Length: 319
Image 1 (cartoon, rainbow, N blue to C red):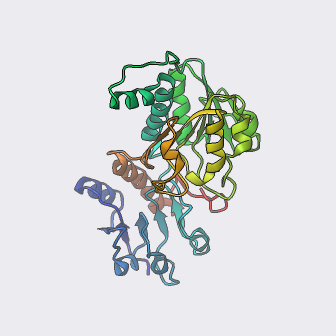
Image 2: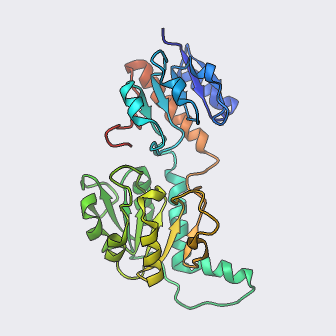
């Protein structure tokens, strides 16, 4: 018999808990701890929000009542996808929750590079009054955005406010609102040839592993910038550093790395044309509110029709 139990492995406020319970009458809600989960509680859960180490065996047992897993993150590459699919478990991710904060980081990178704010901060630390006089602006520049989902689309929307050109890259190459032009993924090098800023928002899948490599960076106009807020392993880091050292790329704004955390001795730390953030682009004090909003919409559809309506993960695509 299916237990009407929802377990969330992340902290929620009392109001957030009440919102979930109001949307799921007849269910109980238990707060767990992703770092120290209660396996007995998880063994009775029909719906789990979040993920934690060491819970796979419990949730994937043949007699587990688990029917739906809502992740706390957009990426699902670290989950046991094959086993979840074999068990017929519905999987939804947190895609879209990050669009506003990540877009802000993308534009933070671009504005820092065009206005030389990254060098100004370093000069301030040395009490040095200096400008190279080569400040630029975003007006008229082209943002080539790999990934036309919620993050890519929000980035394109904001780019238009800066009077930028917007080029998207997607699997299908079909037109998407907010983009002046769309290329398919197999046209990545052609699209990169138009980039003042090449922006990577892609998830990590078998198809995107090391997708951004020397061929792509060399296809960019000399002096372009690379921004990665997707996943570290979508980029060949050695090729990226070579492009930065040669001047082919003028700089890089990086929030994700392979490996993470970025080792202290890694050469990227010492490159003045690189801006590093510690995989925090999606962080925001509104994160849990947005997850709860997404989940409550989905749980109502789940109760009415047996299936959530938003952010269903396609196991064959891994996102």
